[in-house]
Length: 78
Image 1 (cartoon, helix red, strand yellow):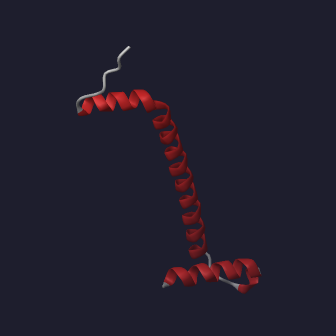
Image 2: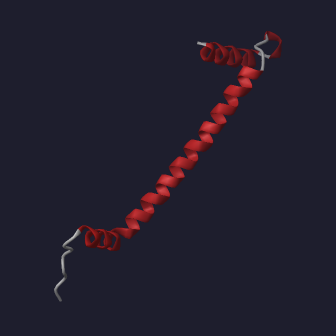
Image 3: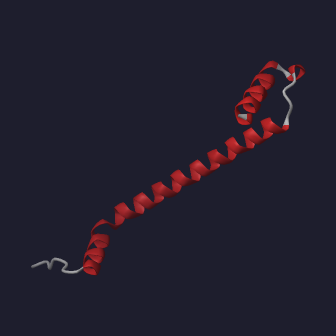
């Protein structure tokens, strides 16, 4: 049984996809998972920053809220 080696570009593409399609699918799923996690994390960070900018830093609201709000407003105003 002789296997023929691909001779042109398109034959190589078909050959490589046939040989390694499991790895391509695994890489695609990993890429989609990573991009979805990054998008969700970015949305949460953006929501938190927007919330900190919308609220005023007042000492009567609690120490943690005051520190976080003043840090966010100071960092983002530069």
